Length: 345
Ligand code: KG4
Ligand code: ZN
Picture 1 (cartoon, protein in one colour):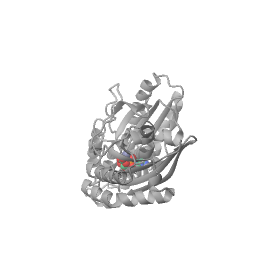
Picture 2 (spheres, helix red, strand yellow):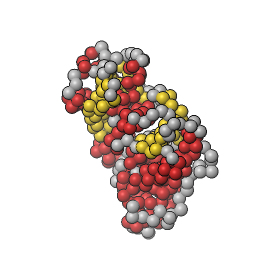
Picture 3 (tube, protein in one colour):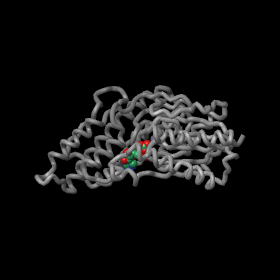
Picture 4 (cartoon, protein in one colour):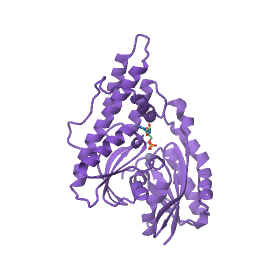
């Protein structure tokens, strides 16, 4: 059976559309278009929901048109329309859902509302053919959780952040140190020249034997360390900036590595035939964090995998991909599909 799904994503600051095809030989991304809004939000130091919603509403049709064109697929030749129905910034999610409903109403194609987190969590199946059950660490600007993915629609959350997401902490750190946004790459770059031991920053919640994490205290500690390091003219030297960035990144890496080791304990107790740890989300691009997690997996005899960066960060191919099992069993939505700002897996 050959099936083709048009996917739409607009839950944060990327407007995206993609066409994905499934055949008995496998799943292929025919096109994946992403319009980032970084430039629109840059001056504000973070995503402004109203600006994001307007930009999604303006760009979503264009993305769909480009995705179909690039895939050489006509809308009427698709088998379903999949759209992120949450969780996310409600104005953006609504833009995508309204667009998808319009297209479904005009063509009579089935409509499938997808959970954005399921899209991320199932990406290793799309990119690496990973078999269930696998352990997923989702670390992005908005999310941080450990999931045991038992099946395409059975996700067991075994821990996560109780406050900030790691990407958010990287972005706030960059702001505190006067580095540009997005903060992750800027902090990683600055940290490469720094001494991670000069500032003793906390590793929160390591005294708890669970897989939960907290990063807001780390940010506050960094603020204090920065203020202590500042000269009388309230400026930081480049060396201070590098040492603070390195100290922060080392603390973040330690917390993620140690909590991942605990999550692996829970996962390996299931005795999976071919154990896998998959990471996804923008923070998975961080080289020291990746190296630490890959090293841990090697010690534990677990395969480590990370999707290519373009599929780690927000995209619509993961949304289309996450809809195939629903389409196969006829589990589709109708015009009452609503946008959900919160939607735990
Ligand atoms: O997954 P993503 O593109 O968007 C969502 O949050 O859904 O993740 C973006 C986050 C930003 O906070 C960014 O600073 C962070 O990922 N990030 C990084 C790196 N590249 C991006 N964090 C640490 N190191 C990096 N190299
Ligand atoms: Zn995301």
